[in-house]
Length: 215
Length: 215
DNA sequence: TATTGTGAATTTTTTCACAGCC
DNA sequence: GGCTGTGAAAAAATTCACAATA
Image (spheres, rainbow over the protein chains, first blue to last red):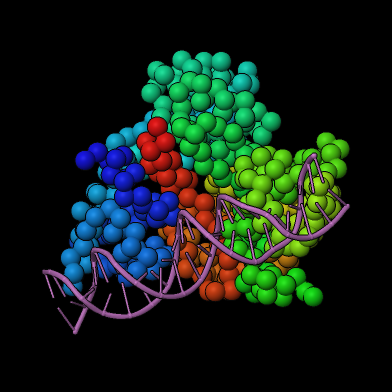
């Protein structure tokens, strides 16, 4: 049975999906420390979750534990990776070579997780042709050509809000169907395109609200 | 009736709270464009939500609309701002003057929303004492003193994962109870401290999964 | 007529308790 | 004895339909 079919049939809750990468992160750390087996309670504690939640989440993928013992760290990590399509390197483009785009471009964490930043774009003639470490800043006019050539699968948008929808439309037109958007705007995209939004100010606003309650 | 009491009594869903800043963003834009009244459907469309959802969310705050007409843009914006405690400037500190910390420090969007970056810390002697635009990089050894002096209410952590928990513990010790964490680690903090986590790799991993499904 | 506000229905998510298994 | 897997219960969130009303 294909992965997609299985997912659609079993209907794994979205809330469970977005916790899987967190579990995976700690499983990989445990593996590096040479730990072979871990209980749901221990792993959940690391991941900021709880035992029953974690067991439920994993139960949607299948049966991976051993009763009375726990989960085989490597086996589980491997399965989550392949389930989420993370067992191969993926090419990522960054749109916008401003401060944020540049910082993201240099972020080491992406490569560690198999995301290769293979091209960065800008429309500023002063930036185009310059380097960010080893990477040349490309003219956004060459967007289509570069995306195709470099086989880009995911785009990160770090552009001003005023340009974001326009650029997103182009990305969609050129066949991109996964966008991580840092511009403070709700992108409108077709159903077959997925976006995730990181709005830095919104995060502070949410904190601002909850911190008063938590007191 | 005090704001906190009201919130706790009425039990506004957390999911509704985190949508309020998005509504607020578009209300402010509308106000700037000189639009005085907006319907739930129109505002929801802008915000990437839907009419009933938006009306339900707002209904937890009170009755702000006029049947047959819509919502008064300025009045609603003002109420959401004050409800979320966003009607006064708040002081923010950034911990870590690496690429990300520096980029965040220069991000204009915070100031627009009333968050003033008033101090940035690092432990690298090569960075301490240098400037990021107008802001001096402070020695992390002076963390307690600076946080108190500058009346910091929210901290943004842009430090390596290995240091994050250690620094978070200090922040809590020094009275900070709101942390925006960019380090890829699940912070352990007391109940009276709120955190929000932005994990860049996790976002790409989630996209990686859903993009296959969306196809 | 147009649009809000909301109780009720539905769906999704989380929690719980314990049978099942090593 | 210890820990998983899961059905059932509970809680949270979303959707819906429509009464209320400017």
